[in-house]
Structure formats: structure tokens, C-alpha cells
Amino acid sequence: MEASYVRVDATLVPQNRGNIVRIVAKCDAYDPSSETASLNANGTVTLLTASVNESPQVGQIYDVSGKVSSDKDDIIAYSLIPLPEDTNIDAACKLAHLTQKVPHMFHE
Image (cartoon, rainbow, N blue to C red; front, top):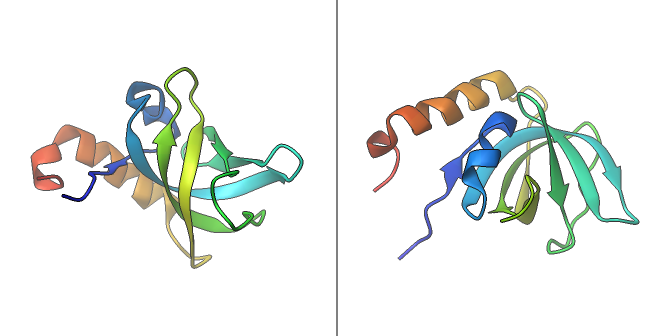
């Protein structure tokens, strides 16, 4: 059975500690020495990238799959999928909130 990914934006990360999530966000900063990125999706969230092979590029929008840390609001990246620069992050954030309100429409 496939894992269920909860769509989130930065405001929904704290309530999803320990969960596997998906977030569409723009990379605002990347620090290769600590392997952390700062993502923007209706707020800022820290992405830990040590577990993925690629380094995020500043200014690029990504569809990120990962797990929210159990003790912090950081996301441990499982995958980074680059999206086109005209991706509407606001619409993705609204979709994340909609999936929280009516999860039966988006999850099994």
C-alpha cells in the first residue's frame, strides 16, 4: 500500500509533526555546509536535504515530499521535483488548506 502524503504549506507544518507531507514552495536560500534550505510557501519552513542527492537551487520552485521532524517544524526531504517558474504557489497553498478541510475528497 502506498503512503499517504498530506499536502501542507508552512502554516500547516507544525500540526503535522511526524507525518509524511508534500509542499509546493520556492527555495529562498540554501546552505550547502548544513544541507538546509529555506522554503517559502505562505511562510517559511526549513528543509533538511541530506537524504536527497540533488541540492535545491535558490529561486526554483519545488514539489517536495518529506517527513516533518517529530520535535521541530523542519521537513526531512525525501524528494525534490522542480516545477516551472510560473507555478502558482498561492493556489498550491489554498489546495493544502482545502485538503485539510475535506480530506475525504483527496485521500483514501
